[in-house]
Length: 275
Image 1 (cartoon, helix red, strand yellow):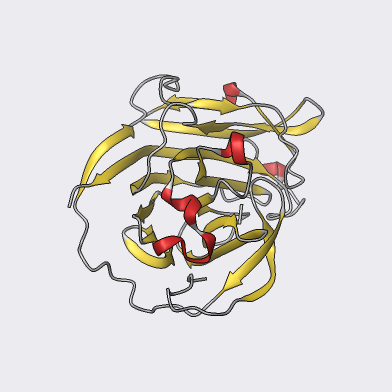
Image 2: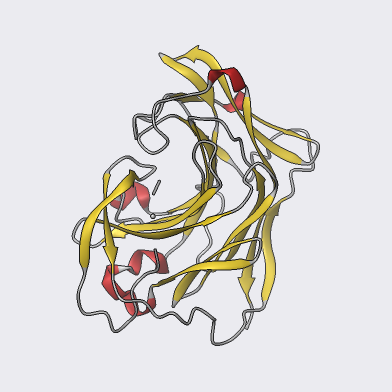
């Protein structure tokens, strides 16, 4: 998981430096910062039509839409063991709960859901209304991975972090990861009240990716004409929701007095641009 505005098409040089985080798949990050176009308003206002959603109105996770990553994935020095029973559906929410319990040699359990093999859009508006836990050591995320990850691996497949949050801060992170002669990333942050419900979204087309919180744009990434080897973002991506515990990004301090801690997802919706 990991993160300031991406380069314009006229960019001719890169500034490389280390960034204080890791990707969700566990490799050290190198950040690319290049000149940016400060006009982030789309030339044509997109018109969207709903093509996929989960409103979580049932009593259990809909396995026609979601599958799971299970166990400890050995990334980012995280301390959770993912299992299906930590993801429940109640009161119109998907509830992903982190618990203090030892399973598989790990001190905590949680859950990680994904649409891999079931739904993977290319472009569109992808959004979720989410309420986040606010304890030290919590690392919830709403994100996407390239559907070809099993054949090309990471970061070649690309990664889109629609929302990441750590610990008990007000900061929300939005980031893109890809391969450009090694791991490259670009991202930014904004502030909100993560312990309340907020709408986290990206709008993604062949030219750019735009990040929003509550429909307020805070970042734009340029992917036009595969600039800076960003061609991974012209391909299908699947959706993930997870709650990690500890790790290189939030740190290893976990406030165990707050367990169990939960991430509440009111809905996930995906729209296709029609104009």
